[in-house]
Image 1 (spheres, rainbow over the protein chains, first blue to last red):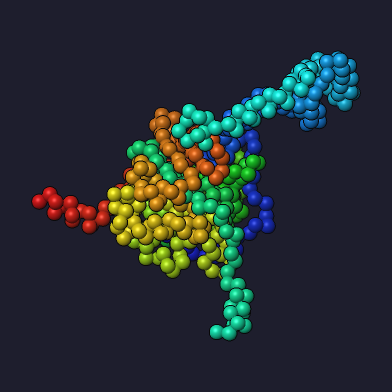
Image 2 (tube, rainbow over the protein chains, first blue to last red):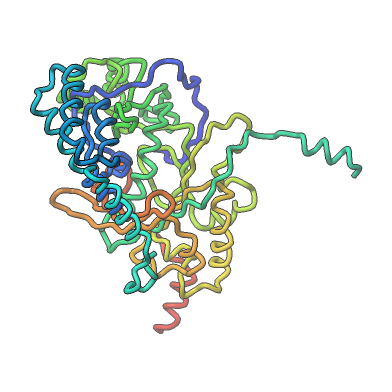
Length: 140
Length: 302
């Protein structure tokens, strides 16, 4: 087997045809590049944010819930707001059980109750920016 | 030379120039003996070769082989499937060539490995035995021997000899050269003029000067050695990515702890399935020691 051949290819490489796609039903195993690229290792801050501000699968509900989490929800409007939101979501997504919607909205609104989540984010971000005096390199 | 002549020279465009790199992609791979350092370096060049696959050289008993065009097999997320390819001429064409030059048994074994996964598409197949994979966009220099993949074997002498003629580079060499990504793997780097104890040798001086031009030469460089402390600080200063390898022989998994400062901040532990890369190199390949060292050692003994 010759190892150092840099010959010209007799046929011009054709890129006009579709590139072969692997059948999705078959598990081919992962290459090293794929393992590294899809590694779920986040930074500590990203992991904290994911736990603090969970995401929902449904894109439109998620958009609304993310707003609830970082908004200021006042105690006197809490129940009315929750009721109206659940009813409007139920009309938009009749396939989702009413109790699931109730839980989604209640969880998101309780995270943002009185603007508590805003304060938590500020606290976490501030803690991350401060250098650790005990470590040798000043936390960097 | 008049001003007009200089202006005309500046307008000349010789070859296509890719955009400059914004950092020198130098990787230092360390780990004890048999911890998968070389295998890690091999994964770094085999994966892009499969991604940019353009042709396959089938075995026919001669170095020229039979060149056929091929394409990569990509997953929906864009990553390539290692050891699989798409040959437009079809399965039977390749099967007949293998049967003719390597025998019925080899061809049937190859056919069975494809049949076990039951793929409908007749053009998607495992890489044929004893074939060489060719990717036009990938250029590989290595100071050890790779198998089944197109590359250029370079010793330290070759590197030094060709430093000034522009061949040790990731830039296009001629017009319409399709190269996009280039690698230089230096295995057993403590023997390749980067040793800390010999920082005043002529070889070390040249290697440290070369080290500061890796970004200009568009080379992805990998130094593999047991301990990064053996390297001189002029080489360790270049490091953009640090990898520590560890091998689990029961699961055949290399755990690479990667710290890539230019890509992501926190270190990443990547489990690599090593079995699929074993056939691309010889794990027991010995690197020859320099005659000068041996002579001085013998003279010290006697």
